[in-house]
Amino acid sequence: MSEAPMAQARSSAALAAANPEVRAALSAALAGERLGFEQGLSLAAATGDDAAALIAVADVLRREAAGDAVTYVVNRNINFTNVCFVGCSFCGFARGPAAPDAYSHSLDSIVRKAREARDAGATEVCIQGGLPREFDGFFYRDILRAIKRAIPGMHIHAFSPMEISYGAEKTCMPLRDYLRMLKDEGLGSIPGTAAEILDDRVRGRLSPNKLPVARWIEIITAAHELGIPSTSTMMYGHVEEPADWVRHILLLRAIQERTGGFTEFVPLGFVHRNTRLYQQGGARPGATRDEHLRVHALARVLLHGAIRNIQVSWVKLGIAMSLECFAAGA
Image (cartoon, rainbow, N blue to C red; front, side):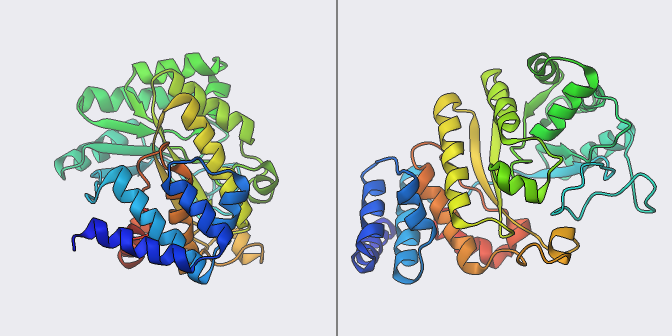
């Protein structure tokens, strides 16, 4: 028996063992229906046979949507500064300007790193950084301009909605004008980070100084409408609950149905080491194996027909866990 019929047989057997509520939700997903919050919540909370059914159905939907080929991009992350005033409790990266290990790269240094990436076979650079108080919002433009002059063919995936909001504020430019300027200078796509959990209650615990949900949506939507695609992300494994996963994913689905601008969804497991949030007892130590599998499977089921690609962050999960997620909808 080939792999596709075997997967169908596994999902049928798993569905038969699931409870009626989970079975009904997953059967609806297999029939092409858009699931709602209550259906999503029953899947997000699944354990045992119910979780096995979720994973099996997610694998079937993955094959239907994206096939069996695993795709990837060879890129380099260039974090041009770790100086940041925002103070997110989940961040182990940021430093104050006087910290002994604080750094800020010049344009020449950023271009040199991009050239090194190209020479190593990269086709894309991902550029993000902290938010220093002393910052020229036109620096983002200058980064794009410098890289494109040096390496015209390099795709630049850069600047989270938080960075874009800060840059527009610093330049006193309207948001759409600022985005047009960045696009004209070579911005190819933006990372849909700074999302964490798209619920202001949860964000208040994680990062009270970060942009609210409405502003994140405004920036992502404006970028899409201007022809700048983005990824979408969700950070999980900290203070959130399964209901937060469902609300977050359904919000992304609603944006995608409006704009079509998300290229993929990337679940990002919380890395707890060296974070104030964990050290002060405010969060669990990252997601469990079961949560990793459930989140990837849940995303595949809820986003089926809307976002084709569910990406595994192998740098965060490791190779072994990533391979398991490939059998759970990613």
